[in-house]
Image 1 (cartoon, rainbow, N blue to C red):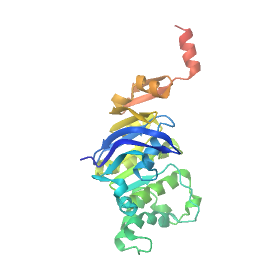
Image 2: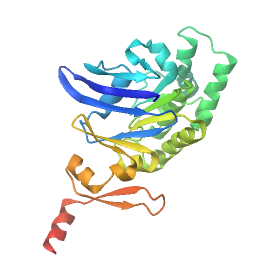
Image 3: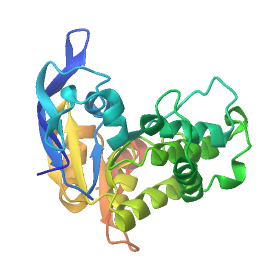
Image 4: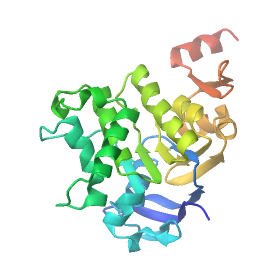
Length: 269
């Protein structure tokens, strides 16, 4: 049985359907990435899985149970979310902020046990923010804050980690840094990962399987080699690309073709 199963899911906002009957599953220990152009339903999918958006049709099944029947606190012990951006209005230190990830286990007024503190410390080590434990979240750079967000998610001790474009506002060094940590947890500790990713090259490099959404439906599903073809990308994204094999990893790498370059190529024919 898949750890997470999406069955003919239909949902949206204000009567407008965004996801229109999509179905897929993710096995335990898998790294799955959802890609697609803006407006295709990627973030809505994450919101439906975490019960932020209520489906109008179909269901999301986690470990054999409809998520609508799982109490939020119980679901938070199993599923953690790393969002794109988080505005931290209060001056939490990094350690205080990461400790909030233990809330599903301790409760609102629960006292942190030695094991809770050990989990927080380990999560900060994994995300490489231990040296920032006394820094205020409001004083952090984008990359540092994203690593603190990852540490908080790991402090929940989830079985499933949902990532909603976790590298969207990071430079290339921090993008690789964050995704290397997540890939290592997936590979070495069996953490199941479902990532929404805007960058096709990062998606193809890190995930084992891709789902390409288009207009609220599953357009293609398979390995990076099966999904990231120039035909599929051009059909869904409406732009010309070249796809080549990475000389380092062997994974597909997508190159954009600017309009001016296309015009020059066409004139030279």
